[in-house]
Amino acid sequence: MADRFRIIILPKASRDIVSICSYIEQHSPQNASSVAQQIVNAIDSLDFLPARYKVHEHRVDPAKTVHALPVPPFIIYYRVDETQQAVRILTIRHGSRRQPKRFK
Image 1: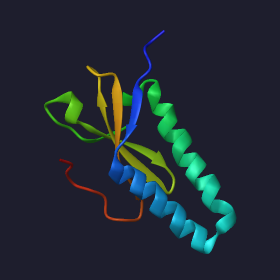
Image 2: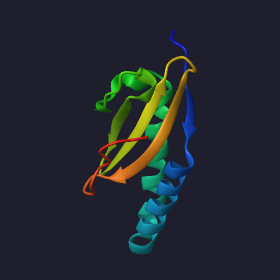
Image 3: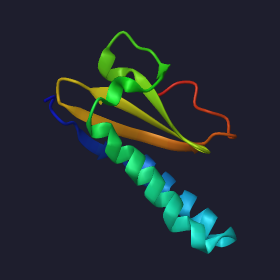
Image 4: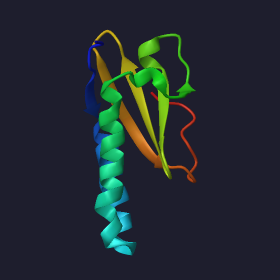
């Protein structure tokens, strides 16, 4: 069985989750927790075969390549570091917003 990857949610992605939930809570309090749970479940699923999702930004160094995981209507952007067996969650964006062109 393949090794599991550690999930690291960067501060920007944590703030994104909080702001998404806060926004939904204002308009539909009953749905805020279910949307947050969908996002967290999708992130947790990246512990096994994280490179299975679309490459958003390809880099020469595979650890700098950015993947995009769709969780409609949101997109979770992340990097896979095979050497450290880690997945770093970079940001979460609504699909209708302008998507990042480049990541640092």
